[in-house]
View 1 (tube, helix red, strand yellow):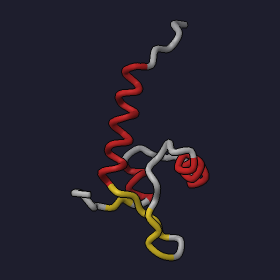
View 2 (tube, rainbow, N blue to C red):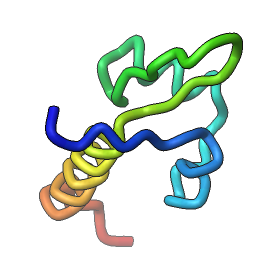
View 3 (cartoon, rainbow, N blue to C red):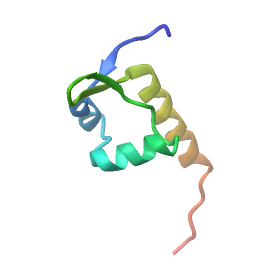
Length: 70
């Protein structure tokens, strides 16, 4: 893995990923969010490159999704 920069929970919030830890855990278990890295104790982090890829996928999904006209 070329980019091993890590992001914390606080970094995710600054990036606009402001969902509960429970939701992130559920998404991870479902394969819908990158898996965390346990740093020790309750400290966790994610690879920045995986988060950026996930955000890119969300952006591409947004382009493909068509909502009903109201």
